[in-house]
Amino acid sequence: MKGEAYSSVADLADYLVRELEPGAELVVPIANGEPTFLLSELERRAEELNGVRVHQMHAMRDLPYLRGAFRGRLEHVSWFLSPITRTAYAAGGCELVPANFSEMPQRLLEREPAFVLAAATPPDSHGWFSLGVSADYVVPLIGRVPFIIEANARMPRTSGTNAVHLQDVAAWAQADAPLPEVTRSPLGERDLQMGELVAERVPDGATLQIGSGTVPRATVTALGRHKDLGIHTELFSDSLRDLVDRGVATGARKNRNRHTAVTTFALGSAELYDWLDDNRSVDFRGVNEVNDPREVALEDSFVSVNGAIQVDLFGQCASETIGTTYYTGSGGQADFARGIMFSPNGQGFVVLHASTGDGRISRIVPTLDNGAIVTTTKNLVDMVVTEYGVAELRGRSFDERARRLIAVAEPAHREWLERAAADLGLLRS
Image (cartoon, rainbow, N blue to C red; front, top):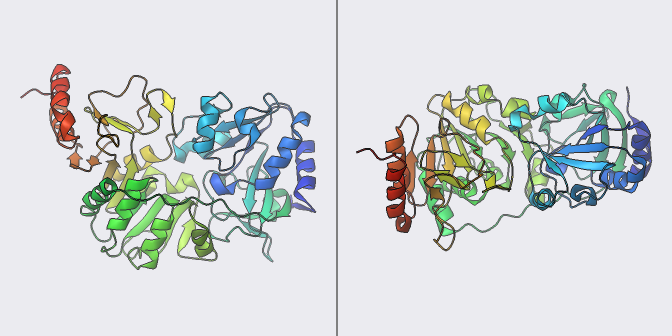
């Protein structure tokens, strides 16, 4: 196979529609790996399709097919909800698949997808496309599933294993579109307090996985005085770029991939995308490698920081639902929670505000809300952080866990939490 170049994305879409059989499964990379124009062209041809389904994590663009506009012809299957697909899923417009991020390539291969539809750089003189800011679950599909590429001149050419050669491409066409940006929301006082609490426990030379959200970002801000930190994270952000630029994250003490930040996708500002172009200090690799707990365990002092919505007194962490309402997805939180357990001196932080903004609703609760989904199980959770302190849970009894979690809860809620803990039989002394 050697990819045929089409003169326009419209012609590329015509080719794709001719090739798709009824019930075909398609795969689109996470976030900015999405081919902007190709999916829109596919929507315009939806009446020619039959039962085609598109699998993707974190869709960035609000397209009609996400909301069920072409039901039975062109449908969306989400593996992690974005602000767009969150409302689409709630309204019944798309499906949602629960899965750990690291396992997603294998789960997709089991569906025998017809094509991967991806945004990438134009090919270089040797026929290599770079998948740019997305490696994620599609890198393991290279050579196993044919790619159809929308070659975007604005996609940064990045380093790593996220390169696709013409021989693995069925067809491609040129395009030109800016990559959607994600702006950084302001950090509040509680975020900064929690960031400091985590940072003071991070040793120099530690390797970091930092999740999304204000508290993980505040943690990065608080790490500015550290030395020789390493980066091995699913999401590379503007905050981590700052650590590299300031000489804080050198990767000098990593056991593997020294002096290189390892990631599986990047999301942030236009400045971040420009910075990543031809920047060999960051390696983009498949999520089956980056998020593999066995890979995480090979680094000493691995530190994982991820957010939660609610934590109960048993130590169960709900990070993807509010009650029965789905908000995001599992992502890689459990992958890293498992990996740091076997990293020498590894630490895992689950971070959340002690209460809602007005203080009326505690986010430390006796039991999770009815129907809430457990993302990080009680046996995997290491430390829970609020603005009131750090609750160390690993290896602790239920009695100790309850007392430690109550100690970091909003003060106004501690008394009723103690009564509830006693009623649950958690406080025995």
